[in-house]
Image (cartoon, rainbow, N blue to C red; front, top):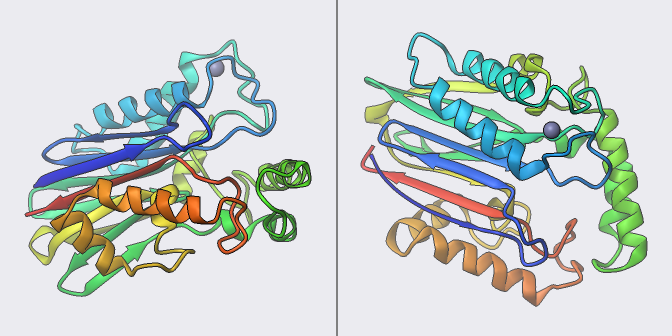
Length: 269
Ligand SMILES: [Zn+2]
């Protein structure tokens, strides 16, 4: 498996809250959720994503555990690292997660939250995404989308949206994400495919995936082609160029002008 990757912080917020690791048999990609309210944690989102990513990368070396078990253990392990923080806080740090692990002739995958895996194989191009979060707080999301980025009305509307979203976080009928409760691992999207059936695949956070969905500028196949024949960074540069052409988010309504973006491509599986 040959991997190439690009990861860019957003233009607006200094620290990249995405996290990834790539090795011969394992890819882990996390997207730390932007805090718009208090978190009850003095460590922050990047700290959470980095420690969860490291725990998952290490945990996945145990092939007797399946990916949901590895995620549950990783969440527990990170929670145990900061017992003096208020882990019951509704805004406790969280991250969307994707894991791809190759074990012998199989490739297993797990998705939880807004990170996508795009497989290109004998069944064509298939995107595995978890859209449960975008189905929550829909009225608040619509209201926020209607306002121009940079306005104080938009900022206030996004806090209302975040509060409505958090009220649905990690509960039945809402959406699930890695935070402080290992039970989230019971709600992941998982699957496995035969390695020989996959020619290439990508794992990407929503800051990168937006060029396909919702921007609709290119297809998943075109994204894979550009990433393979040019580079993953070429995709991220194109995302940034589109965003700067629409700084107020009128053509493509979104929460912020640009978002942390990560794209990992694996070929010759
Ligand atoms: Zn903490």
